Amino acid sequence: MSLLANTRQHRALVVQTLRSLATLDGLKGFVFYYVVISYARKLFRHIRARGLVTSVVQWWRAVSRSALLLTMRLPSIRSKVEAEMAKARKDIEDKLVRRGPTVVRHLSLPEEGQSPEWILEEMERMDVETGGTSGNTHWQTGKLSGAVYHGGKDLEEIIVAAYKKYVVSNPLHPDSFPTVRKMEAEIVAMCLRMFNNPTGAGTTTSGGTESIVMSCKTHRDWARDVKGITEPEMVIPSSAHPAFDKGGAYLGIKIHHIPVNPVTRKVDLKKVARAINSNTVMIVGSCVNFPDGNMDDITGLAALARRYKVGLHVDCCLGSFIVPFLEKAGFPIAPFDFRVDGVTAISCDTHKYGFAPKGNSVIMYRDAELRKYQYFVYPDWAGGAYGSPSLAGSRPGALIAGTWATLQYMGQDGYLKSCRSIVTCAKTIEAAIREEIPDLYVLGEPVSSVVAFASNTPSVNVLEVGDIMSTKGWHLNGLSDPAAVHIACT
Image (cartoon, rainbow, N blue to C red; front, top):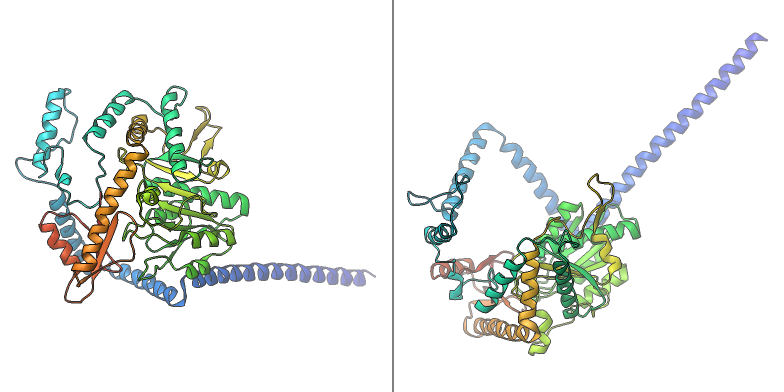
């Protein structure tokens, strides 16, 4: 009886152990297949978005880069590379940083504070020392592409007066500086009306890059909350501003770059559609892009955004206060603003063709419900509840005051006149290149202030053309893919 009982107990123990092993093996198998399927889905999405050839090329480049980095660790090769890098750094420093016995560098605080007269005199001396002119006004010759967006001497004085009046203000404390808070709200409201969305919402930022990064953050958090997306992706044209790549790097958003048509310079809508998947939080269009001044098919992108229920950001940072006035100025432009159903966000740089002081931009959303995902709020801090609308905490209220003053001074009539003047200048340059210089061609059909040109013939290196123009005092922008040079009229 005892032997039989022991046998039954042993059999039960064996059966229980086998069942446990089966369950464990099943769990292992489930985990294994889940991981394989998950990575297979990611691989499929990647190849679908970028194409097999592009994916293979990118893989080969990654492998080659890794191999090159490993090779560079060899002592003999590393020393050569470091020597070349040191030479390159010195060449750049020699070009950008003046040296010599007459150059004075202020590397530590003075023992005693300097007088206002000394400070102004030293600024004048440094202008001469660095090869510039008083106030670095070489841009006034008209040979500088973009960079400086100047509304005239009278406006400059108004901006300085606004700065002086609100120099200590900080919109982080709206209860202490209610006027600055009011001016910021009015700047956003004016821009929203300019882009045909008076009931929308937005904030000011420190520039186009922050506006774009904020939009990336907003759409990422919206998609996580509403759609449950935890591995966000974004689809952008290859001509889009690198600020979108910066936003992706900061915020953990995978970026798919879609090529533009080599003739029209518009992003390929079919490839955009192919790149959209269940992890896509936002797609992007430019109006206009920086490299060649062309605009994407915003209505086509909006149709995709509606179809797949994703966000659509229209980057008007460069188009800013030009593109909203093109129709009134008599220049044709396709729909691009909030009148297009599907557009969820627009960025606009007030400090470009709005002529506001540098360091101000506006990010606009279709409604306040979307904007709320931009805000950061931390209620549990020992210092009290903390909240901010953008990346910065403290911000210069004087900059907001200067921007508000600029918009009030210019008015719709002023911006309409500047739009007509600037775009007429760009169209004149475009026509001259098309009609009088057969060795060059204009990229696409630029709609506003930027014209880019490339070479029609192998005997003409367009980048060398840009270099030659530099020797004649011009400061233009060299481009790649294709090699070209662009002029931004201001």
